[in-house]
Length: 272
Figure (cartoon, rainbow, N blue to C red):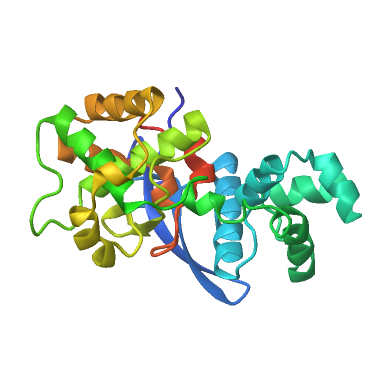
């Protein structure tokens, strides 16, 4: 494997990821950047591939902030509607190259975004699937999933006074892996990118009700869903392991603080 040397003669540089704040089209954005960093002088350097990835992250962060569909959202919704790039382009009256560019990171105009949404959202029930994982939100099912994790892990996760710091990570992985493998999440929860990792959106308002929910009022877990929960519990037998793993996921690191995490990015999970 090739290494990058510090231009100042300090030896090999280390590959690290850090948050970068930049201004794009007069909008301030924060994105996660991977670059080679000299441990001695702090100088940074990036290769062409990394620079291209950063440009896409900046474009998608801008689109998310301006309420435009991101490249991953366009791709996910297009596939949910069973459109090829060519068939969507034909319906919209644009060249297929435009669809490819938008999915790869080029920013569409507001008018083109509205046209995209008219074909990808307005005529289907999947406009929010990227945030809820193809399932209706259910607090009793959150409790059911949490109790199964407790059974396998042999520890309490629904603790008195707990703010779901660790439970939320188990739930997030379970929902994301289920969506990735089965096409449907487990709980219908939405998750936000918060400083302490992926967390249930509006968790402060939900904690009490989830703890008091009647899990028997929810749909039983299927064998495949149980397999997913068991595999996550076996992979991360203690809270610190899953907490650290969630913080290594690019899905969280690249998301603007407070933004909702997309189920459509589940294919990018790296820790499981």
